[in-house]
Every structure is written in C-alpha cells, then in structure tokens.
Length: 296
Length: 292
Image 1 (tube, one colour):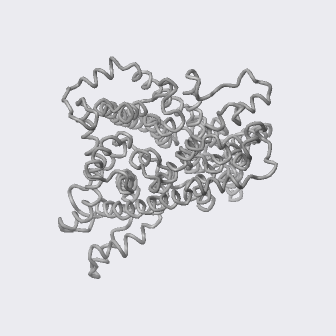
Image 2 (image 1 turned 90 degrees about the vertical axis):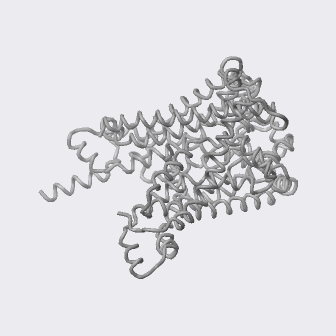
C-alpha cells in the first residue's frame, strides 16, 4: 500500500513539469499533424481546408506511396526473420562458449554507432571498385567481376543493399536480447529435462523456446516498429532515390514535406504512419498475450 | 545418495558442455565468421582512413597504407570543425541527460509512491507516447518552433530530445521505485522528513542503478541522433557530431582518406565509452528495448 499522502500542489510540482513538456512536444504536434493532414498548405502561405482529399490522393493517386508501404513491410519482414537467427546464435554462444560476453559485446558494437557513421561507412564499402569500395574489390579479387554492382544506385538492388546494412547493424541487438533472455532461464529446468532425456536442440524446443516468448515480444516489437519507422539510414544513404526506388513511408513523408513543400500532404502521411504504428503495437501485444497464456 | 545429488547438480551447472565433438569446430567457425563480419568493416574503415587517395583508389581492400597518412586526421579536425561539433554534442547530450533524469524521476516517484487517483492514467499517457514515431512530429514541431523563433538554436533539439526520452525513463524508474519497501518512507515520515527530503535523501540515492540505465539510453539515443538536428539546425557552429559528419562527407566527397578519418573520429567517442562500460551499456540497451 502506498503510504505517501500529499497535497495536490505537491503532486503538481512533481508531475506537471515533465508531463506538460511531454504533452506539448509529443501530443500537440501529433494533433497539429492530424489537423494539417486535412489542409492544402505549403507551410508558409494561406492554407485551405480540403477534408480528406490528401488521404484519397495518398491512397489512390500517389504512385510512390504503395511501393513505399510495401518496402516498409518488407523491411519489417526481413528484420523479424533475423530474430530466429539471433536466437540460434545466442543458443550457440550460451552452450559452446565459456565466456560469451566478449563475443556478445563485439557483435553489439555496430548498434551503438550513429546511423550517419554506419550509413557512410557502408556507402564507402558499396562504392565502385575504382573508388575504393571494399565489396566490389573483394568480388574482383575472387574473380567474380560479373557480380560487381553499383549497389546503391541500381534501382533494382539499392533497397536490398539498405536492408542488408540494417540487418547487419541490428543483428547484435537481437542476439544480445535473446542471449539475455536465455541466461535468465533457470538452469534447473535444463537439469530436469536432462533427467527426462531431453538435451541439446530437443531441450531448446521444449524449454528455451517457450520460456523466451516474452523476449521474442521485445525483439519483435523492436524489429517491427523500428522498421515501420525506418528513416535515418535511408535518408543518409540514398534519400529515397534513385527514382524513389528506396522510398519508405517515413522518407516519402519527409520528401513531400520538406522537399516538395506539401505540408498538408506530408502531414497526412505522418498521420498514416502514427496510425500504423499504434495498430501494429496493439496487434503484437494482443497476439503475444494469447501466446503467453497458451504456454503458461 | 548425497554424492549422487551433488554430481547431478555439478553436471547441470556445466550444461554448456556439448554432446557432439564435431559440432564444436563448426560452431567456432560460425561465430568466428560472424565476429569478422560484424567488426571487419570498422577495422577496414580504420585502415582506409590512413591511406592516401591513390592507395584507396588503386589499392586492394586488405592492403595496408605504405605510410600512415595522419594528415587525413589533421584535415578532418581542422577543416571539419571536429572539436566544435564534439563540444556541441557533449553540451546537447549532457543537458538532455540531466533534464531527463530530473523530470522523469520526479514523475516516476509520484506515479510509484504517491497515493493519488490519476497515477495510472499519467503512466498510460507516457506509455502511449512510446509508440509514437519521432519523425511524425518533425513537421509540426518545425512549424511550432518557427513561430516561437526557436529554430536553429540548441533548445530546438534539446526540448524534443527530452520529451522523447522521458517515456522510457519514467517506465524504467517507476518500475524500480515500486520495488522500494514502504517501511523506508514510513520511518522517514515518523522522523519528520518532508516529501522533498524523502525524494532527495532516500529515493534518489537508492535509485542510482536505474538512473545509470536511463543515462546510458539517453546518451546512446541522443548522441547519435541525426534527423532532428539536421532539420532544425542550420548554423555551422551549432551542429552536433552526426550532422557534422554528414556535412563534412558531402562537402569533401572526393577526399576519401579525410572522409574515412572523420568517420573514425565520429565513431571514436562512443567506441571509447563502450570499451569502458560495455557491460553497463549492453544491460541498459536491453532495458531500453522494452517498448510497447
């Protein structure tokens, strides 16, 4: 039972500074954004109220929008596909390596670097061999000259090159999360399983997997929501080009708002993005609640 | 019987022992390859940054520079305003961290320890905010800041940084503060301590571990933040490090060695801190992954 009875003034002193700042800088902008999604406005001059016209244009007339949504979802699919791999690595680390922490923290290193650094580093790696790009140089050294590409300027593969960098950067994060989860599973469960004759992969299937479900949820939310919001890396590496081939929802929003100066239209994309994020979080939480109930 | 039990428990504590001996080399190989793929690009960047343009353009990807070109670093530091960006980043990150810690621990204290009706609602408000993507607020914030003539000041990035870091901070801190036993406050009240006294002399000192976590999360997120800074800041003298790195790279696009050097310099502060605090940082980042 909480014991502190305090006056309303005290509560206000403790809560309001943070809450007000937070509401003003997060909720108010979102509401402003929802409203300006209904305007035809370039940000400076007069604005006209156009109702849902921006949204109908977005859904039915925008040639960039749906491919961008598709890429965003692909991003999420690839990121989530990485989680079982990370779990596998974490199981191996836990079972075969005496002091796994060194490897775990090494794999994690790319996560803490700024996307600007990561993006520029990989742009350098993806450069043509004649500009010192590592990847193409390696391919040439392996006599695979026909495999060399201009990885970020060829519309057919530019997006995959970016997916790869994101997967590379975040592999260490998912491995770390799964690894921490496995370490928190009580060792006597494995002992009991061993007595029952379950070891190795069999024990993983019956113990590691169900015990780690809450951890999967963390990873999946991180991967899914992170991918929906995927933005910085693409802005740094291609800015959505070539010819919109790497546009995702967030970059499309940014380019419409800040490059084409269609503030109203950009706001409607922002509103769409917020909506998708909220719905996705609710669905993931619902699914995992059911899953956890089933396994507990 | 007793000895039997102890062997069981011993073999269980080494349950990491593999059953198949063929598997072991394969696992080492796999984990080794992964080690190389995760770290080699960074090492390659280090070598790259010490080459001259000719070596970069003609040389092979694993060759070492004939003479280390430290001049690349000199160029990056002098022409690239490195220390200006660095000190801006230090300033912005420190102010953000201090404000996040203070504001969120006040709220967390109120949510977890006060007897009042709306605590859960306030918590819910913060939790909803965790799901809101920062990019969606870029445009409206820009308009709001323009009207307040805050654009192109450090305040225009620090304020949103604080706002976007508080939800996870409140979440972590209030989770911890809930676990502090009530008896502590009861005895403090009997001793006549006021609410601020309890907060400052009891709750704050006890909550240092989760505050450390909050600090680490804030540091990693804010130190690396790029888009907001690039949108709201335009003066050269106000740019933070990631934005500075980006502008340097786009400006000196043909001086490959200097670009490499600037990227190394940009990554260096975080890497140094990671070497010192790897365990704390990984723990903090796991705590920070718990969103939604």
